[in-house]
Structure formats: C-alpha cells, structure tokens
Length: 90
Image 1 (cartoon, rainbow, N blue to C red):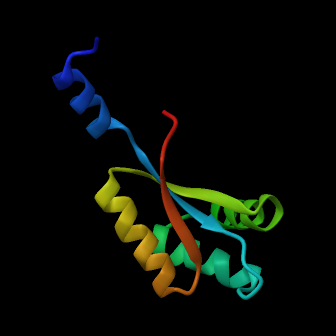
Image 2 (cartoon, helix red, strand yellow):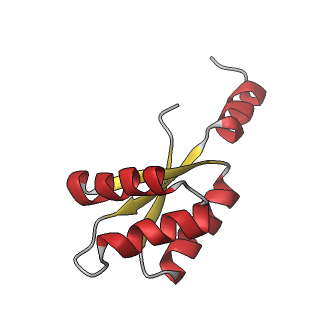
C-alpha cells in the first residue's frame, strides 16, 4: 500500500494542461493572433499550434499547475475560443 503522504504529494505535482479545441466559428488567423497575444508565442509557434487545432481538432497550449491552467482556460473563453483543462499523463 502506498504512503498517503506520497500519494498526496504526487497528486499535487501532477501537471495540468490547457487544451484549445477546434470550432466552426473562429478564423485560423484569429486563433493564431490569440496565441501570440495571450501566450506570447512567436508567429511560427502560434501558426504551428493553430494548425494543430485545425488539423487534429485540438492543441495543448500550456502546462502547469491547476490554478494557472484554469486562468488560461477562462482567458481563452473570454477570447471566444473553446478550451478545457485536463490532467497531464505525465
């Protein structure tokens, strides 16, 4: 059986992800603009992630603690993008 203190520490250390999903509303240029403006991605990185959203249906745009990822998701919603957070597999 695992020590409860170790389990609790592991749970708190597990990173979270901010995921932006494809939608039928926003233009690809707008999504890239949001990524550059909000996350500070270079033009090339913003374009790469925008194409991932467009072609694969989603892109991970940030990784970190839960509170920070919740703020990112809320910001993406404020920009009109569909975003969620998820626990990282590690």
